[in-house]
Amino acid sequence: MSAEFSVPTVDIGPYVTAGSAAERAQVAAALDAACREVGFIQIVGHGVDPAVIAGLAGAMDDFFALTLAEKKQYVLPPSKNRGYSPPKSESLSYSIGVDSVTRMNDFFEAFNVGASAADYPGAGLSTDDYAENVWPEVAGYETRVSTYYDEASRVAQTLIRIFEDALKVEPGYLEALTDHSIDVMRMNNYALPEGEIELGAELTGMGEHTDFGIVTVLWADQVDGLQVLDSDGQWHDVSPADDAFLINLGDVAARLTNDQWASTLHRVKPPIVNGTIKRRRSAAFFHDGNADAIVGPLPHFVPEGEEPHYEPVTVKEHIVAKLSGSRAGKKNVGGLREAARLNAAAQ
Image 1 (cartoon, one colour):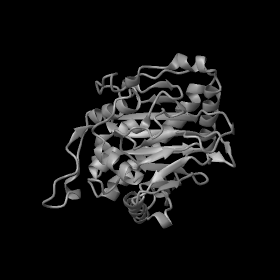
Image 2 (cartoon, one colour):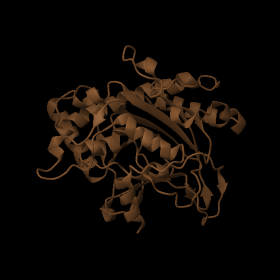
Image 3 (tube, helix red, strand yellow):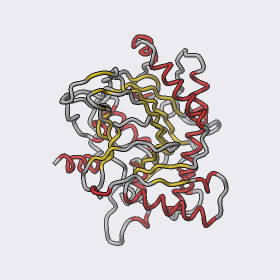
């Protein structure tokens, strides 16, 4: 794969605008092929208004322009997975049980919002799993971010419907695993100031990791930095096409398909162009699944006579282990398959 690596582009319009059954079948087949072969996909035809994306970007700029002391007012305990994360406060590689190559934490800063228990009235959910959001006192921030969040959620739910067709499971199967999904949107700012930088410096924007849940919807600047690991153990630069979102699979998708759809290993390196570091922003919407959903390989993805790659686990148990690595500094010993892929690439 290495010599001809590319990220496929899939137009999901037939699922957004009520296309024909034949058109939807073509989309599902294209997505299935991309998930098996690459694990990263560019999607177009998603229907998100560019003005909504511009609103998100403006809100991010307004918040990240605050002083560090002002931003630190919104730091919450790591278990909440909400609020502000200062630079060098996390190490994403720990979420798969791997030491950072540089032994220094990742230099990005972030702000997280997500689904709260109040978003699913009547479900009796715990705020331990569905924490309340904290909103900074920045004019229009909550409105602009929430508007984009709702659109990203809609795109993720559309992808779930496509996944059901692609995986040939009964309609509603995956929706039942996500009807009170742990959804989190992480807005990232790669916080080294723009300017000259020593090219030999060992810097990590965001360490090697896989995402936790089913699917991630990513908006990002068209600035280099994001890299994806292919099946041959080679890293490749990936940047969103015009008007496209980047989509990648998370660990829950890998569990459901017994690794036929692989959770995508990726990282962010400092975006250096002609010796100068460029600012890079991204917003990742993580559609993780219900906290109490038990996920393991679907029977038709386990060959007869073979043991499945994964034992069943709840989405909550899996996410807690991953967060304990990235945000609390405790290596996730459950990330053996992901760590093995990364270590093989390092060789």
